[in-house]
Amino acid sequence: MNGLTAYNFPAQVAWKTLNLLVERKGLIYPTGTAFYVWQRSNRVIVAFDPSAIQLERVNEDFAHALSTRLHGRRVPLRQRARHQRQLHARHDRHRHRVGAADGVRVRQTP
Image 1: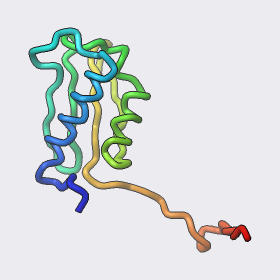
Image 2: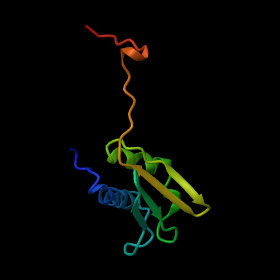
Image 3: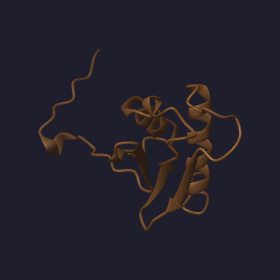
Image 4: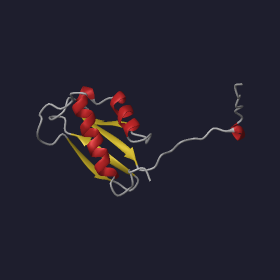
């Protein structure tokens, strides 16, 4: 277990999103609701309040940094309307392992 089990995954996403917003100075107001988090069957959705954050700070780089903090889980950024942005963090990690069966040769250095 890596601490990001299904039981506390929405809370982890919320805390890591808030910390990243604070680091990147994306919050307009220091108090109040900046985003909403809700859990779906296989992912957690983060919907940002456009009146509480600077939307230009929530971009692909933000999604990549959040993905890194969530131990490699995919976090696609979706823009639902002109002033709405959502992040979708998946519970599971999808990684493709590359090996000899995939036609890749591994060279060992002496």
